[in-house]
Image 1 (cartoon, rainbow over the protein chains, first blue to last red):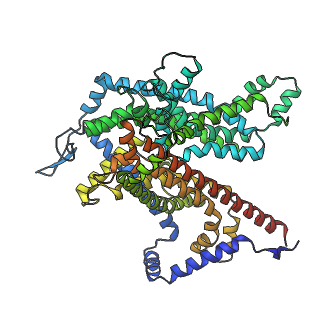
Image 2: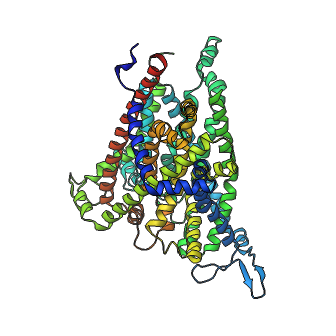
Image 3: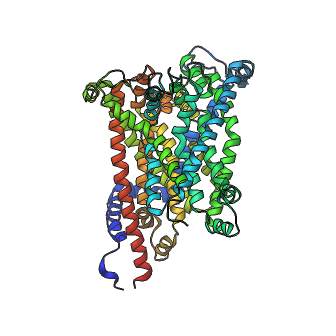
Length: 335
Length: 279
């Protein structure tokens, strides 16, 4: 075979990259920084880890520590609206005012309990509905032929790229009393009066299922797609009916995909704010909405922080489940 | 397996995709509606598009959001590439568990918590260091970078772990310096992943309402914040027009990116084959 026919595209890319590197090296600050860093014993490798590490520590981990601190502080009318937790008294004594009042408030006030339970309920039902819609779809895509598979997969992802807010907004127009669905049903003569769908829990379920469907389909698809189909053929040869084969082979094998997809829907659904705010009833209690109201309307930062900490504790189990499912998938892929 | 598509699977696909696309199509359809009542058809008209382009509030917010999204995506790709490289190629280093935890946690964190925690950080930083002064574009960009770099990290890491590092090792054996290896070998290989990471970071930033609402200040309302405050009051046809334009742009972008990436992938595979078979 003659390899000279065409230069591999890699070379073209590297020519450009080489140029960039050369220009960069000519640049005095580059050399200066390099020399300085080498003098300090910092190698490129260390810098590669250190930069994102430092960023995440500063902007991801420390904020949580501060939230935790504020959750134990007392409210005050000032800016920022909470009292310091640690105070240096005059004689070098550290006073720590640990205030459990915010958490007591959460426990005592019925509103928060209801909001937590309701968020869990809504998230659970929506996840179940999402699985019921998503599983057959993922299955059908995974069993389509290769050309169609890529097109269908792209079509699943495409809505995900368009604005989430606008997709939720679209459902207002569909679910309203004089919206598309009611008009259509009345035109068909199935109903005489519009069904109230907007500002109900039903609307929230629809919104969550619609918005998070790609998160359910993608892990299920990647699981179902790599399944060994000869197992099904063997079962068929041994006289198993397709439905039974599905129940005894496909479904158990796709368990990691089901768990991963369900957790990817459940976790954000618990803390969801936009969907209940736009589609749900004004008095619908979802924890994300409660946190938002505490923060923006009541300006009660300590209680909002306590709500956030409690929400996080609630999500620990689902997050651990997700991690385990993803690890199981990764192991399966390497087998 | 049978070549015929069974009725069950076909109907699942039809209903599934109808569910996904009817809402979006209805948005576009009613954006050409003359009537102010969004769901009553009053004849074809493009007047809402005209009204949209006269609405300074929306246009300013859109411009602001695009700027933030572009800066954010660039920063997120740089940070995410470094993090992905470290996770995929550096083996064990001290603090790795915490690091990998921190890169994946933002993906599953409820937005309200991320927004709240970043806001209290910015407030505390302002008290202690006097920076950032007030909140606005800078704080929104930092917040979005923290969120979206996690996505880029995952993409880069998974791309790197599916590719074996023999090319990089060969270059190292031939005496190339690590920086050179990165720019000449690793970067061209992961370029498609970086492009999709950039696009994803851009879209997420452009789309974010919750985090931006927490960390923005007066005078820096992003497009989702303006849309949300309008939509809360009810349906309005110019939002439909805006939605249609966004859907159109995204569709064009995704299709072009898809074609380009497929072409790139094919070329790469051909190169690999040539390298493997051609002497």
